[in-house]
Image (cartoon, rainbow, N blue to C red; front, side):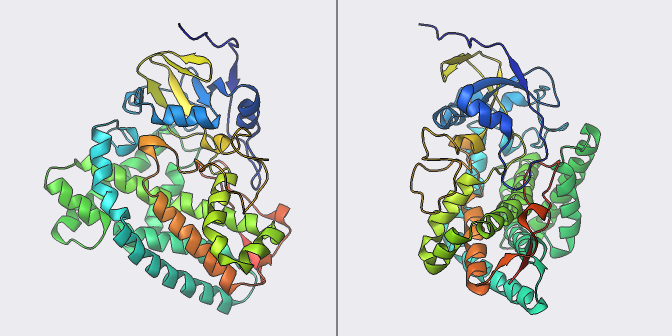
Length: 403
C-alpha cells in the first residue's frame, strides 16, 4: 500500500536569524510540534527540501542507506550557506563503501589508548590555563583565555598543525563557516585550506610525527586514500575542533552560570559531570540552521509522508533533542536527566567522528572550572553577553566572568 502524500503543500521559508543565548529557532521548534516532516526553502540554492525534526524520524533518515550524501555533489540544493561546506569526494559527502573506508582510517586516532593519553594532557593544559586566568585576576573572558585556547591546543596537537599556523587557520575557519561568505569567496578560502593541508601532508610524509596528518599521509602513500580525501578529513576535524567545540563548551559554561542551583549540586558531586555533559549537549541548540542534506535513492516513507526518489532531505538534530515524545519537559534543563541518548553528535554512518574528543574536552574544561573557580559568576548581566551571528555554529562571542 503506497503511503499518502503529505496533505499540506506549503513550503516554509527558513533563514537563520540572530538568536541570543540558547533561544531555540522558532520555525523548527514549531514544525517539531505541528509538522514534523515539512518542506522548507533555505536562503541559497534552488527549490525546496524536506526537513525532518522528530526524534525517531531523524534517526530513521540518518541511518537509512537509501539516503545518499554523495548524490548532493553538483546539485544546487537549497542550503543555509552560499557555498557548500563539505568538499566533493570528502568523508562528509561519501557513501559506503568509500565512507566506511575513510572512517576506518581515522578510527585509531580516537581509540581508547590515544584518548586516555590525550585526556591526561588536556587536564594539564586546562589546569595551566585556569591558573593563568586566575593570576590575571577578574574579570576575564573565558572564551578568549580558557575555552578557545584549549580547543586550539588540543586540535593542533592531535592533527599536527604547527602552533605558528593557528592564526591563519582560524581566519580560514571564520570565512568558511560564515553565512555571509559569498560562493566565490567560500571557494577561494577552501582552496587555500586545501593547499595548506596538502602541503602539510607532504611535509609529514618525509617528517612524520605522532599526529593524525602523519597517519593520513602514510595511508595516502600506501594508496589507501587520495589527497582530496585526506584534505577533507583534516579540514573537517580542524573546523570542528576550533569552532564547534569552542562554541559548544562556551555555551555550556554560560548555561551553568545562569542555572546556579543546578550548578551548585554538580559542584558538590563532580561524579555527576558526565551525565550533566550529556544533558547540556541535548539542551544546547548548537547550530544556526542545518548541516548537510541527503538525497533519496528510492521512495521512502517517514512520519506518514512519502519522500520521493531524488528529493533532498535535511534532519535537524537540535529539534530531535527537544522531542516531547522522548524527553520529559524537553525545553527545561535537568542535569539529572536520564532518558534517551541525545543526538547532538548525529546518528548513523555520519555520526560525528570526533564525538569522543568533544566530550572529553567538555568534561575536562567544566571539571577544571568547577574545581578552580568555586565562585564563578557572570561579570555582566546575562542579557548583555554578545552572541555570534551569521555563522554555522552558535556560541557566545565573549564570555565575561568574575569570581
